[in-house]
Image (tube, rainbow, N blue to C red):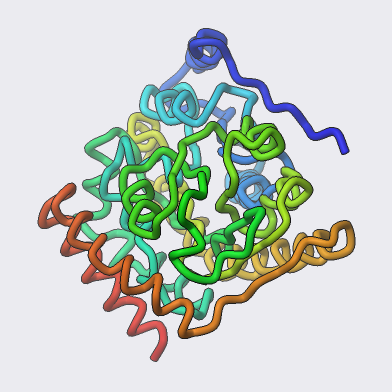
Length: 344
């Protein structure tokens, strides 16, 4: 099957031009055309979240504000999106693994075996006001000109590979594509793999041509991007969830009147339970489609197999602390407390 080829813009020049034009379209400090840039393609979990967000904004502003959605590739690559958000060329965007290079504290969500095995517990803990709106977390984003509004878990990160992986020894020599994130590189090196950053839009051909041997995505992404077509195994270790930060440009956010800032916070809070249900349904549907359209083998690691990876992942917490300082230590402690409270 021929896959969608996503555009990679040479040196980012076209994205910069588009961003400049978008900024020029804002005639006032309070534009009525709001823009959301996605890390994912149309139909993805981020896309469905953005659609629901747009509906809520339109309803609560009585049609005063229209939200336009730009899927991955429309405004450049992921790094272009972050820069556009910082410069208020787009008003909202999602950030995940690669965001760690800009907001090092966000690598907290890349740590393995931190969250509960219960996805609803994790969604509630990540979006609990005491964690989400804590001074440490908010300042980490605001210092980089982002305003964090919510955290969107998009499902368990599932390994795909051309060989079964049940133990760290099975990762030996495996070139696994990762988002360009220092903590992820260190984690997969600890597992024995060869972590290789690669742009999302290049991953299908990279797997097909053997440039990389394995990948890490939730089920929905394996399906919608066709990665399962060029891999033999899908391995679930429940080591981490894919967590995206839903952010506003701090320039844009600070210019909004108080009632609209409160509206954005209310919408984000109201979508927490809905987003959990939505992502579970999407991932279940996409996994079923994978099963129906391929002979790929699914592997679920046992508790004893997961324990081997847990032991190797635990020292990475200290690495996280050394990179981001005491703020990172406080954030992890707070998240663990929120997870425990949500479980109870």
